Image 1 (cartoon, rainbow, N blue to C red):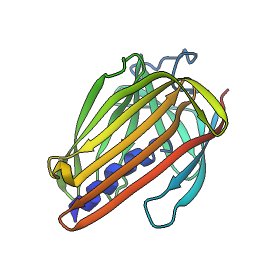
Image 2 (cartoon, rainbow, N blue to C red):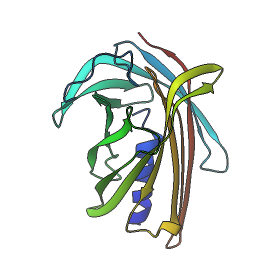
Image 3 (tube, rainbow, N blue to C red):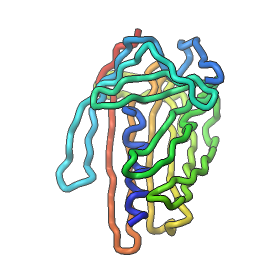
Length: 223
C-alpha cells in the first residue's frame, strides 16, 4: 500500500534526523552546530513503536569533509550505526540534506529544520512531492518555534539557550483525522540536537501504524 510506504518514509526522516553552504558560518560560538573534526555525540534511542521497547545507542562523529549540494556546503558527519549525516548552517538557517531509503522512495531534499533568530511563535512550512513506487505523494512539513532560550536537563547535564521546535506532517492524500503527528526537537548551542520525540499515528483504509521514538543525548566531546 503506497500510504504505508509514505508513512515509513516520512517518519524515517525525523527518527534519524540526528543520526543521519551558501558559505557555512564558521563562528561556532553562537551556532547550534559544531563542525570541528573529531567532535563526537553519543545518543540513546528508545523505540516504543511495538509492544516491547527497543533500546539502542549510537555515536555521531564530525569528519573533516564537506560536500557541495545545490550550492550549499554541507558538513559531513559519520554515524556509527551506518551512513552519514549532512548538515549546513547558512546565517541563521540550519539545513539537513535528507534522502529516503531507496526501497521507500526516490526523493532527496534540503530540510530547513531550525531558524535560530526566529521568535517564539514563528512558523514555516515546506511542501514536498515524495515519489513512492513511481507515484508522487504531496507532503507538507510544518514547523513552529515553541520555546526559546530555555534550559533543559538531560541525563544529569544542564543545557542552556535551548530552542524547542515542533513539527507536524500532513498530506492531502490522507484526512487529518486519520494521520496525527507530534514531533518535538530540542537544540542547544554548539551541541545541536539534544533531544527529540517522534510520535506518528496512522489509521487509514484499514492500515494502522504507530511510530513512537525518543532520542536523548548521553554525552558529547566537542573540539
